[in-house]
Length: 409
Image (cartoon, rainbow, N blue to C red; front, top):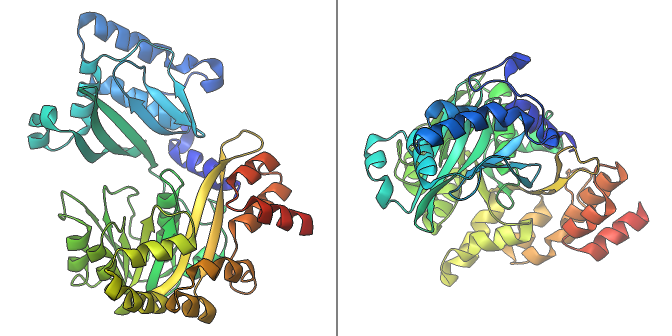
């Protein structure tokens, strides 16, 4: 698991280490952003002439962030550009951005001409932006204090792999299911997209299937290897997840990725897809398996929930819940995962509305099913010196249980 963030960071760097559009780095974050001097000077010159931030300067700021392992880049009036590196916000040592600077950033990253003309009336807007050979960016544009701000999430050009991320081998088994529902859950920024992309990549490299994704926006760009891949984006390609997923059933998919399940209609269609022989991957912002199951069931009316539990018990193949933690050596972050895999006992507990008892099933399901609780994995990471005891305890959903696992190790 220690490889998770390191692998993501490596994937963000240019192939061959050469200098790309935006220039190479001249130092590192630990050297007070010395690499940014040229970009800072360029922006200062621009500001003296006007309040414009040209696209070349934006691309250089983005490229340098990618090369230094940032996960997110913030552009907000009244602050300099801010990079999130290993979970820590690091502002550039440069002058604060003017509202016109952030407005220009928004105009540069919006591709739709009509949306550009409506920018001043938008309150929130999601889109994506790409720098060939550098990375793609998931973009959220929003208003704060009456001005435009932008957050860009970096999505590496290189598709992550299960082995490259240091993920458990059981994820390959999960990805090898012919049909059913697989959920990857966790808070925003916990690496769900990377884990899902790695499992799709495993299928793409090992199976001759039609993989169809519905995303908001498209993040990793998959290329056909053994499989044929169709990627659809909310907005340009389909109206919403429910409509896109309903249409997907008529598009001959073997595997479907739904970026998120936000409403009853989408959950219902996802269950139908898995019931009719498709393997469906999706994500949710839940923290563990019991809460994921309860959340899925609770979106339906009370009179339908017993039937939904039956359907879910039959369809569910796995729930992988995860969070990213700072490494003990300070070099990035590592992923901790709880893994639930379908077994007859898991099916029974879901049918009988006993999701709260699944922790015991997971705890004793390591062999031969590959299940693990957060506490078991945190103990393993601590014993491998990947994380500190303080980090393990603060991340443990049940600190007393973690202590018991540590004492019995």
